[in-house]
Structure formats: C-alpha cells, structure tokens
Image (cartoon, rainbow, N blue to C red; front, side, top):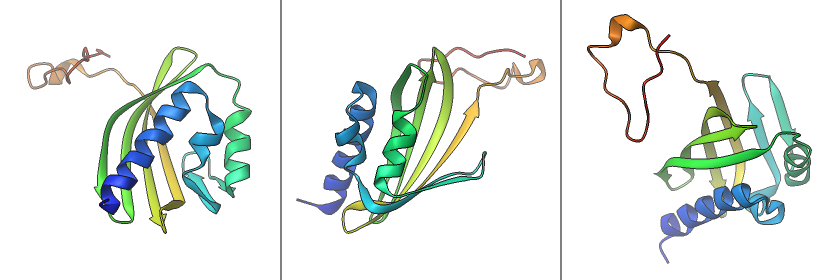
Amino acid sequence: MDPDIRTRAAIEEHWQASERGDSETEHAIYAPDALLDYPQSGERFRGRATIAAQRGGHPADRHFTVRRITGGGELWVSECVITYDGVPSYVVSIMEFTDGHVVHETQYFTDSFGAPEWRAALAEPMPGRDITRA
C-alpha cells in the first residue's frame, strides 16, 4: 500500500477515535517519545502517555469534525472543528511523521469571530456555514 494512503488512513482513524472517545486508538498514531506543542499556551507535552493523560483529563464534552486533511510524506495538516461543551474551536493540527508515527504535532486553536460589516459585500459563506456578523 502507498505510504501516503496508509498515513491518511491513520490520521482519519485518529480523529474518528477522538470523536468516539477511544483513547487507545486515538493515541496509537504517536511515537512513544512524541512531542505535542500548544503555541497559544506555550505548553509542550512529551511522550504518548503524557499526551493521552492530558487529553483524558479534559473536563469538557468534546466533539471532533474534520474539515480537511492534506499532506504527504512526513508532513500532514488537519483542519478541524473541536467543539467543547457546544462551543466550536477551529483547529489546525500539523503532524510530522517518522517511521509511520507522529513524532511532533503542533496544534493551533482559535475561537470564532464576527465578520465586520464593511466586508459584507465581498464575502460569501463557507460551505455548510453561516457568516457571523460582529
């Protein structure tokens, strides 16, 4: 099987396992010594077990929707919406692979914001979305 097809399938399974709360399958994608960085908070989590523990302790009801996965070789990007207690957060996950496992992931989180009125005539809604006004 083509390595990129295998990697894409592993990433899809990672996000599906995240949605269904299957921590073992969710974290199988990571190398034992993987790093996970959250630039907004400055946090780094070292090791598959630590990554799983910090996610397992999350108090919110979480849901995961993948909008797009793109990449090839050792570098892959997922664009997702992670909903925490009903509030969406838009996420970009950058995964770096070695030997079929994630060795470094960086996740960027952002909250939604209202579009200013001055852009109204220039914008159209993204597929499946409504434009939120400021």
